[in-house]
Amino acid sequence: MKPRGVRRTKEGVVVSDRMDKTVVVAVQRLLRHPLYRRVIRQTRKYKAHDAANDCNVGDRVEIVESRPFSKDKKWRVAKVLERAK
Image (cartoon, rainbow, N blue to C red; front, side, top):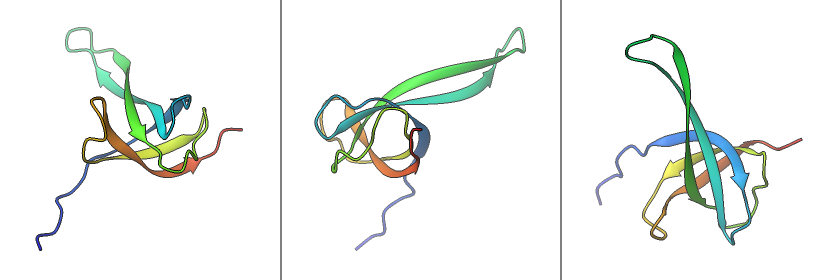
């Protein structure tokens, strides 16, 4: 059996947990504007599979790329890094 390739991981904050076994994770990244050279914060939201319904809004989580669970859900929660206060 061949070993799996390296899976992409991202770190973000849970912004919604209203769906069953699904959380929406906002991932922020910094990039420099090509012309003005100013640092811009860019946010992208990912739907991630949370099998145990363990995450709450505000939790900092690590998500890992996975097989497609649905049309939009192609990531799963690997671990909760920090609980919301």
